[in-house]
Length: 77
Image (cartoon, rainbow, N blue to C red):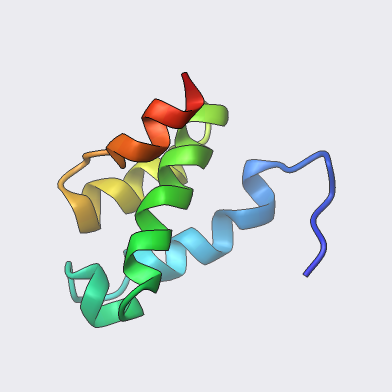
């Protein structure tokens, strides 16, 4: 899938809501390995680059106790 250079929260908002409404709070149960790791990393990236969009932080809150991926954060510095 090709993404626009002008990525917006609304472009992903529906997908994030789909994750949030799942009953499980275990990303491995929902996504499996290694997609659970990619979910945390990508939500960290998007939350840091689009802080006004709360969807990404909500996914981190639900599946990762609100903790961002440390490796991703270090790469952004």
